Length: 578
Image (tube, rainbow, N blue to C red):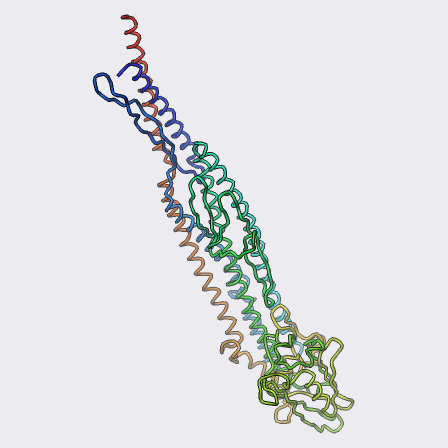
């Protein structure tokens, strides 16, 4: 080996040592940088030429490349864990908020309000309470239900705001990843190492996984493609941005995340966005629906009894609370085309009711049955609604009763009025038509957002019909007893449970879900921490290890410098001999 070859070997060792020191230094400098992957220099020996004596010796060392220490399989599992943790944390947070809003662990809860309401009727039936206290308690119950529903819908609006903010954040990350794809391609095609850009891209993809579950398809220098479900949101350097699409279907507010290009719905089931979407429906909407269903049955059952209640002095006038457009007045109550009734959560059925008209001067009472035909069968025996009862049919029958007149108000509410010298009451309504029309109702509205005590009743407690006509005789506390008993009455519409039990069942379900969500979030956090530790073992920087590498390269550099110095001295000695 010539002295020149020896000097070249030393020179290659110096260059490799310098690069090694830079790699070790860069690793140490980025030991605390989030998303940084440890880099290692790949050293290879250089093949030498055959010497004069026939002996081949290598010609030094070359740092061929600088590689990132990354386990693609581990990165994929980590992304999934990040998505699961994002979903679990959101689910736990939302369910805890719902549980706090329901507040069943305190004294000011819906169960307590329901108990107080039915207790007021019981006290009225036992002459221990007044009509005004019954109305006051009903007003408090209605206000509590409206406020509770308002709290839940406020939470839903907050979720919608979080969805919008999350989609904006996801779009920023998608744009960043697409830009990094382009930069990495340009850099590596030119022969440069793009490790730093790849680390930045991996970190952005990991952050995106916290928002939504994604599938990453590696395409080498062309970058990565990212799919949400089966829909691509990044193809190379092109990002397909997301958008929030809101729509109302059947009176229900729905929110979806769509691809901004063609508005195709994205199947997002995990991550923060997946958790918001899922729990908006499964937690908030489900609780609101349960509250609305329970409220609707409360309104219907209370009105069904109150509408057939009576007072000692009888009714002089009763006006329904349901407003009917002119077209719906002549349509059958059970006709699907009758939107006024089809949209209600409770319906009238085939049957009828009694109207009791009393002559005030003599006390003589006449009872007339009002038939409500809602069997869905025409007079010809075929399925149809043409011959079934409409609100107009009921009005005509009522107007034909001696001592009564019946009309529709200007806004379309059925109004029954006693003629001079008469009063009236209703009883035995097997059709529930009076409750549906809201005639002599206690509550107005149809859900927790609209429930209220009837306005004129709230203003004048003497309009309360706490009595009842039973077998032609007036029972002063008949309706109050029936309404007090409603607290323990199992309702088919509520799955055979009472109103209070149905609500408590729903609250317990939310509580169990909230507790399970906390456990799931803790487990997801543990899995994430475990995978983070595994990634740190593969891609993380050990200061101690890098310090050793730094010392090794320093010694190598010193040895290479000594080699060059020795070769130079030998060459100088040789020159002196010539």
